[in-house]
Amino acid sequence: MNHPIGILGGTFDPIHHGHLRIAQEALEQCGLAQVRFIPSGTPPHRAAPLAAAPMRLEMVRLALNGHPDFIVDKREAFRTAPCYTVDTLSDLRAELGAQQPLCLILGGDAFLQLHTWHEWQRLFELAHIVVLQRAAGLPLGNAMNNADSALQAEYRKRPGISITCCPTQWPITFKPMNFTMLNIEEKTQAVVAALEDVKGQDIQVIDTSKLSTLFERMVIASAQSTRQTKALADHVEEQLKERGVTVLGVEGGDSGEWVLVDLGDVVVHIMQPAVRAYYNLEELWGVQPKLRAHAGK
Image 1 (tube, rainbow, N blue to C red):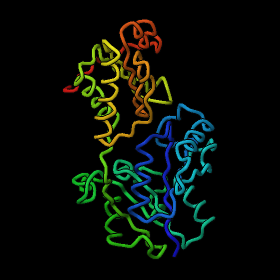
Image 2: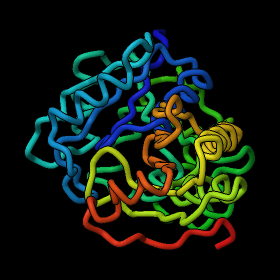
Image 3: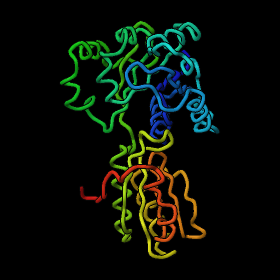
Image 4: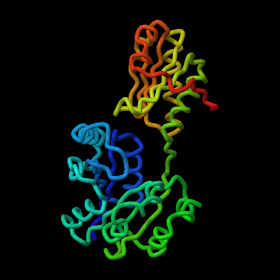
């Protein structure tokens, strides 16, 4: 039988490092031939994406560039009708045949809500469900014991079945993620803690989730010298890497007047006071800071 193909859907508004790490975990743990990223045009379970379909599709293409086992699948991207997973899997089955193993990749939270999806019980006829959870052990811990009774019943039907089993018995498999994926608040607080370690001043956090499709939090801090600006940026980069966060880029380190650290969904601006006053990013974005952030709060 062919190696299984992974399916990872989402709005990808925007795509970020967490999506790539989840795909890599599934690729390695399940022996997948590839992972197909399928951007949703009209998601049925959440508000419409902020970025238009062509922009989100291009962001996914750029993020996957150079990874030989990650593929962009645009079949949902331009649909105006609700994009139901059961329809997408049915399309893939028609293309690839009944014997091709398909692995629908889900996080634990999504799996616990599976019973609310359109024709959700048909999903088990179409694909193997791979649930990535934060730690090894019992499936989703106590949360599985409190899951919807119909969902629990479907899970009990499929213990210990192989990924490459008979296509009428696609299994549910729980896999531990071998990395700690910080949520947006945890990542933001890690940034603030790193800035406070090196005496960053006037640290402000701005919620940009409704203002930009490129990032969700902006953290701004002041430094009193070129040396301190660079030290703050270096410490943020070092501390976040230790927490398993990929640093996408650091800009402005040569001059040290304004250093930007790009963490994907969090962008950090470290500025000398005169530069910060001149550009006044808080006013430029037209919002008041979300909070005067402290790592311990």
